[in-house]
Image 1 (cartoon, one colour):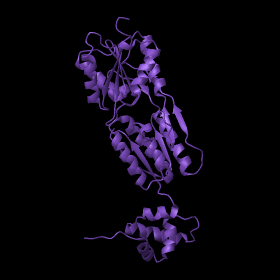
Image 2: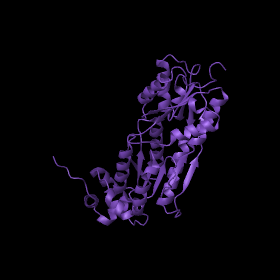
Image 3: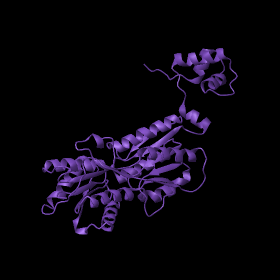
Image 4: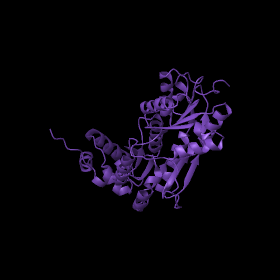
Length: 347
């Protein structure tokens, strides 16, 4: 059975009013002249008929879609799940819906997500990008379409033509390495997670530079690549340990908490006790970290502040409150010590 969607004219006819009157009532226009009795009758008929307004038509009238686009790299990672949840709540509080594009930790797919979200009927975009500098040219060529965008991700050598929120990864990593140095650790492994189709993300060089500046010997710094999964990190941990059986690391830092959790499991597999035999540190401080056994030390990213500033900066653009050039907000990271770290064995 083919049931037609009720139209505005159907509501007006059922309520015995002009179509324009029904429109003003249903759109809650401040200058509506209808009496309370007429308003009640129109609303009752709309409810009875199951009338739903045409959002495209409303958008044309209001010159906005009341919709925000969001790109996230990994909905399997609790960090991005929490961020998406907070951004959705913030958008709803302003009367906006949120639509999500999921790049699945793939740099090529991330580009397709950017192209797709630009073509959607959105008033603004928040893009959590794996590697923002890679997309600088694309963003520059598409910013002319006038869709406000805020990028959340790492800063690169090339400036972006849109607003950027970034976390001081170097500061947090420096805190972690300084702690390890103070507690007697001399050999440190780093599990760097790369996205699909990503050759490098600069994190390895940041790790090596900070460690060297703190007095670590470069021959005692070990780097192993991984993907962004716990299983991949566990395999990377095993490679790290197997390749240095005579001189194993006393501590391991994962690029994110999933890498840290993978390292915890890998340590258990080979009979290492954490933190007696090995200290493990993650990055992000997801909600699982304090619940693990042992609880995971992590470099916390301020997810509340990221979502807060992303929304504020985006709506400043949407509402025309700022006309200045691209802005950048740098947020601090912080080492949160838990049970997975301690003094190096023998100290």
